[in-house]
Image (cartoon, rainbow, N blue to C red; front, top):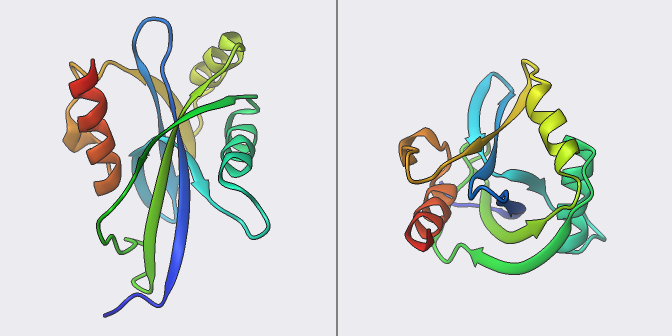
Length: 143
C-alpha cells in the first residue's frame, strides 16, 4: 500500500542537568508506546508553536525551543494509518520549570506518564518508533 498523505510530527528532546532525557510512556488506542514528548502538527501552526503546544497539553510545561536536532530522511509509514507517510522533526528544548517536570513524573496515570532515562543504560529496543530509535542512537553517541 502506498501513502496518500503526509503526517508531520514534532518532538522535543529535553535533557535535565543530570544528563538524563525525558521520555513519555503512553497508552493510545490500546497501543503502549515509549517515545519523546510531542505530537502532530496542526493546520495553520508552525513547528515550534506546535511543540510548545504539545508540552503545554501533555505536561502544562512552558518550554523554549532551541536548535533543530533531526528530521527523518527515510520513508516511514505510520503504524496507526497505512495511508500516512510520517515526517518527524526533533528539536532540543529547555525549561526553567524543573519542579513542574518533576511533578509530572510523580503524577503517574494509566494513559500517560513521564520519566528520566539515562541513555547509556537504556535499551534502544524499549523505544517504540523507528525514527525515535535513530534519534536515540544519535543522542547516545553524543553523550
